[in-house]
Each structure stands twice: as C-alpha cells, then as structure tokens.
Length: 358
Image 1 (cartoon, rainbow, N blue to C red):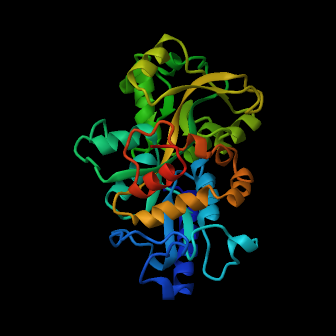
Image 2: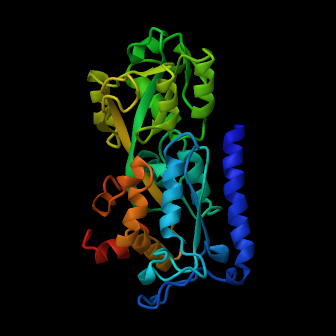
Image 3: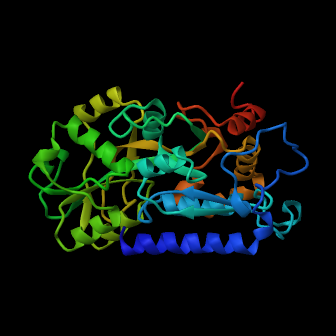
C-alpha cells in the first residue's frame, strides 16, 4: 500500500474507532429504525453495526470512489445527539455513523463483503455478478453466493492514460511499452485484460507493471511508465493532475474491437469523455461500467431499508449534489440500472415501496 493510501485508511479507521469509543453505550445492538417503520420480526443481523458504526469499502484514494463514499457516508450518518431531521438536522439513520475507507478495489471489496469482515463495499457491476455466480478470472474457486446489492450508484469510465510523446495513438501501440494494469485486487485489472484481449494484445507483449493509479501517475511523471488503465468516474483527479501538467493524454477505445467486447460482455456500455473534461484533451470514445453498492445477505434487512431511505431522503439531495461529480449522478431512478445480482431483501422492500419493482 502506498503511503498516501495508508494514511487515508488509517485516518478513516481512527475516526471510526474514536466514534465507537465515544458511543460505547450503543455497542450491544445496531441502530434502531425510526418508530414510524417498526421492524417486522426480522432475524438478528449476522453483521451488526457495532456502536452504530457502518463501514463502506470504496477504492483507491486516487479514484472517485473514495470521495463518493465519503459523501454517501455523510448522507446516511446520524450520530447520537444530532438534531432531528425535521428540525434541520441530519436525515441519516438514527444512531449510525458511516465511514468510507479506501481499498485495493472491487475484487478486494467483494472478498471482504463475502466473508462478512466488512458491512458494505463498492464494486463494479461485472465483478459483482461474477463473484455471485462463481465465474470469471477471480471467482471460479471462490463463489460468493451471499452477496446482495443495495443500489447501482454511478458509471465508472475506462481511461487509457498515455504519456505524451510516447508514440501511443491507439491501443495496439501498447505492444512493447511499459503499461500498468493496476493491482491484482482491482476491477481495473480484470477489465484491462478483457480490453487488451479484444484488440488481440497479450499480456506477454507488454511490459506489465502492477501498481495503483497514484503510483502509476508518479511513474509516468518521472518518465518511467508509458501508459496505465484507470476505471473511475469523470473527472478522475489523478488524470486531471497529469493533463494539467501536460504529461498525459487519453487514447480512445472504439472501433470493431470494442464492438466485439460490447457484444461479449454486457456489463460494458459505450461512453464518452467530453472535450476539455481534462486539459487539452479532445472528446474521447470509451466504455463504462456501473458501480454498485453491495452488502452481505445477513445484513439486518431493517437497517438496509433505513440506509436507502436515508440516502434518498429529499433533504439529503443537497449533500449528494454538493459532492463530487459522480455523487451528483446517484439517482433513485437509476438505482436498479444494470443490477443482475439479487437485491438485499431490505433493498427490495424499499424499491417496492418506491414502485420501482412490482
């Protein structure tokens, strides 16, 4: 783990542990739902929220997943002693403190949610389904049938970032170049391999590095890396920093190769990075994948219901809209978009009440 990721995780964990000590009186049970929605004889949660503490694994601090997680955590939190929602206070889950944590990425998050060592996590839609089904590169021997979805959140865009002056104008130009495909626990690596294969490029044909986006950016700035894949919402801070300094450019992912990938892998969608999203970078064709919020099946259904009710409380819209660009795209109307893994039963109850499912 790089020093910046370590510090981010440590600070977040420290805050969470501090909250847990401050509200030790709540450690015996999860936060209770409001009296207006009494629980319906639900079983005790196998994943309790200790001291009202609910963790969200996000992704690298160099992608948009972490700041989006921080924004969601703010929206759904309602620490003990807060002013009531109807009096201008927090409209989160009463007694609950949510904390966003940085992580290695989707594969690592799914493993933690699947073994119930964490309450929730973000993961790319394709990897959620693969893990639940027990198929695909990372999951053939580790089926995680207890994964459940709370919501589809926002699209994650595939960025192929290249060093200016490297001579890389299209993906096949990566042959013989120094390329980072991210770490083994990331969804980026999983999809980078699919995209390379779509263009007929084998890993053996490139000089593969396995570093996170922050380290990849540092290497590129030192002229020690020619290209790296990044899957993130737009704009990705790491890419913005490189393009602002005129170090990097983007390569489009388009043509018959991508058409083939779209036909074979339905989790991909066509996407565009608009001109000037990044300094001096023209409009770039690419693909995207939905980012989903997953929990273990054992999570208390009443708690799952209350989390979603808090996330889409009308007064919390201002928190999402004041957050990063991808948080602004979190909408109730797209909460079920691309969801092919079962919903958590608390989420199913919420969406039925919202008449999004029948």
